[in-house]
Image 1 (cartoon, rainbow, N blue to C red):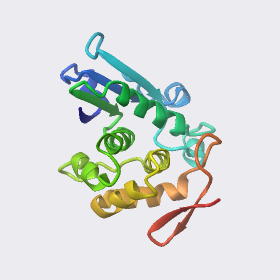
Image 2: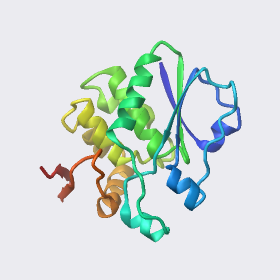
Image 3: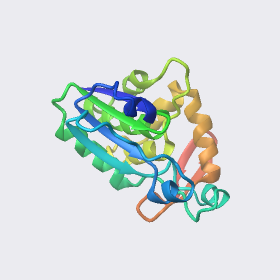
Image 4: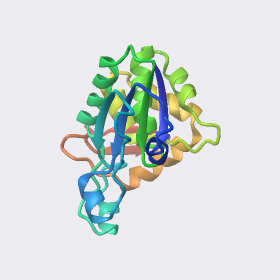
Amino acid sequence: MKILVYPRHEIESGNVTADALISIGPSAQSAEIIGIAVPQIPPDKFTHVLTLKFDDIPCAKLGNRRGIGTWYGPTTNDVEKSLDFARTHKNVSRVAVHCEQGKSRSAAIALAILCDSIGEGNEEEAVNWLLDDDGQRCFNPYIVRLADIILKRNGAIEAALDKLCPSFWSWRKYWIREMVFPEEGLPGDTYVGSNLLLAH
């Protein structure tokens, strides 16, 4: 099974060929209130489709700045649904994952699936497989953290990204300042040096 990551416009163009698709669109609140585009999937283009709706990260501050109460980020359930979907369709040749820009949410979901598929101890291989040439792929740090916990990797996925993807470090540092944690997500994080430590 090959995992491919795309921005929304490439999926909507109808030029992407894959057996299965994980389509990540905005939360209903973001789509309705601030007009973030809802993906328009070409009919009959993909045999199997999983549709998820969440914003880049759970973020009250960002929501308030944009005129809404809360930015609805990914949950444990979203990551588990994606992993289950990929496991169910593990025998297909190509699985496409998309979000708005193909850089954060979709990249992190694809990384979780790839880490699950190739097994423990191969996290750096998974990261290298998904790094893009221009270094713009930044991997949603909240999804990465959830995947690390769900797959019981003890921080190995985050460590691989820290080592191989410089943009992940700056992206994660930014979201540490902005993020909030809904009940379905994680407890608050504490920032210490180069590591994120769960605050129990």
